[in-house]
Image 1 (cartoon, rainbow, N blue to C red):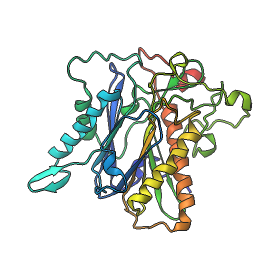
Image 2: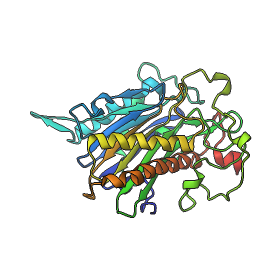
Image 3: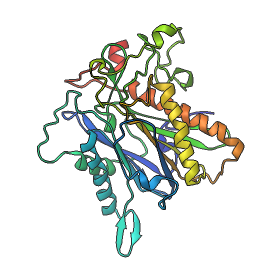
Image 4: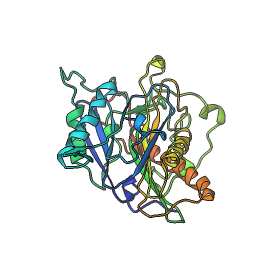
Length: 339
């Protein structure tokens, strides 16, 4: 078992990712573009989600393949990002055909980054539709992590008032040849690190020193279990959400894609303490491209589910680890705090 060549979700052939963000706004959009037919689903576990087109991904509904997924900051205003991605893909001739029209299918989800120090005085028209268009145009197989795209203004809990979150990704190639990839915008109420230490909760899953390669050290259980949540004095506000995508090149049914999303949520729980709270909108989309033509046997599902969770955990830690500082930040980055 090993990371893919890029250690990104785009190690799965047929997937590209584009970022667009505004440093003054301290927010942005990330678009996953699907250039191949796929099977998609979603699972929501947070108590305060913000979504678009998630009902069509439920197993009882007709649509199976999607054209893109939009992840955005901006809270409810960020839902415009999916409209921008949709418009750009239509201009590119993508989408399913109805008579002489192309209709792209673009589910989306948003996170809350409105009180992170950025200028949100955008007037009558929020910028997220335009950022969605830009993100779709920027889509490539290589893309930046940390304070970019939907992770540009993300914040998490941790030492002091909290740390900067970010955009993370990781991939794993199983011994059987199946690849699993994760993409995540980390903006959770909980902390990615243990107690007062610099140790990531996801440390046991780290590959190739991807988030620092720290030496293992003991953190007292009493310290590690303290709730170091973001904005401790405002914890009743819905100011959080970790939104992600788990993808694979295996052949899955829609119900199995749903199960993969359910399993990947364990990666949230292994990387953020706490997660899935009433003040988070945690959700995970799942995409299966079938590119390697392998259909997992029933006996393969334990490993596939476990690796979906560990890959998501690694992506979360990478998103926080790769964050960089920008003028006006309200929280420090992991690197600023720990060196």
